[in-house]
Length: 331
DNA sequence: AATATGAACAACCGCACACGC
DNA sequence: GGCGTGTGCGGTTGTTCATAT
Image 1 (cartoon, rainbow, N blue to C red):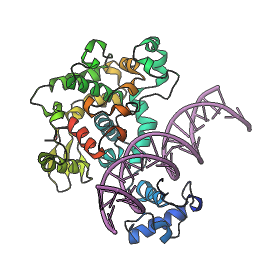
Image 2: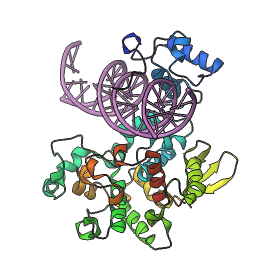
Image 3: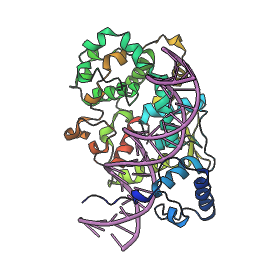
Image 4: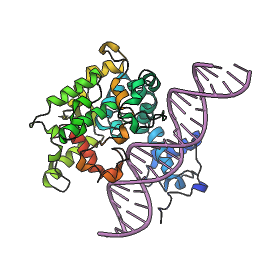
């Protein structure tokens, strides 16, 4: 038996909200709050809307202090840095940008930032006749012009590097077969390599305690809560400013280390000499075949799914934490 | 001027988690 | 512990507007 629908779809209005509906919802919530029950709310105020729709409208549009459009360069950089680090965790990224919603950031990324970052697909298709013969390309559908990566290609490089560090027998352990990197990515790799010693916890993911273990509960869970909570904002240096005024350095080296290059990159400054990304040609379309996680964390039964598909992860919140822990010095 | 195409944004959908019973 | 329900989230679709042909 499937799950009961959250509302009677036949009798709820859909589509764009009218000013009158907005006013009703806004006035009520400002006066009485949501009552922790979105499903019942539309009935209370006489709106023929689904509760989920009301919630979305409030959170993304009507809520006070919401900013729309006009993303600053600084916000661009934060979004890009965090996307490279944690992927499409839009709610977490949004928590770093006061006044921005996850939906807004997601749309902004999909329509503008991604293109700004990766360049136009058509251009590098035209410029890379060899791409169709690369060994990885056969894994993609070359006719699928929408196969522009859903995750930043920079992330792919970082994950490949992690694969190498954790599985020396992996194909990714052979630099000779790696895609050619652009200068920014090369610097990322060099920096990551420099961390590759036993003293750096960044590359000891297998030592991370699991939920339920004392060390996890005492050290990691509270830290994760702290990271995910909205009570802080990111400074330029990625030092976390908590709501109580205290600062906590999360050590986001993978982001801050590359900030100058990222700034330059985002400004479309070609001083670093990358008009097109050779590595993107090489690995274009190979994302579906990539294992983004260490082998022992990857469910081979769902190998076709991407790394963010919860079906491939044993427990989403645990995976969120491990994702953070892999990239941030959360110790 | 009419039509096609693309960009931007709003809204919806379905899944998974949290939580109370 | 199992079940039902509300909520949060990310992916996707729909709509509108701008620009190109």
